[in-house]
Length: 173
Ligand code: FES
Image (tube, rainbow, N blue to C red; front, side):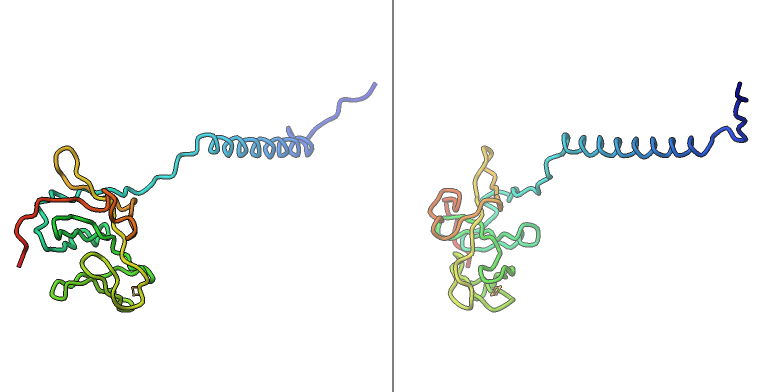
């Protein structure tokens, strides 16, 4: 008959190693489950809004260019020849934001000097093509909206969203 083994400690070395092994396995399982859960319930990326309310068409006097949305939306609102349109302020050369110079009636890019007329057509400097326009429309209440996520290059300026016909008030001096 063998004597029962006497243990000095409650936990022997083998117990500690076993516990360590189970802890490692549990940790790995937990991490795997968490990763799988994240994969299953992955949230769609939050997209930045692209549309903004630009007031009423009457806020823009005929013959003017407004830069009130340049800092926030990079958009100039132009009202000329019975049309309202939104020029997206990104130079077609290397992407700087042009400025509007009312005395010279032109947009001028501060980076390399490209110039664009009131319609956004390039006429000087290295810009290879006109500025783009952002979509404009009126809602049911007659408010003006702009969507910078939808833009029109010159070939598409004839499309409805590229401009709005408005009843012109008198041209500004
Ligand atoms: S970025 Fe406008 S001219 Fe170069």
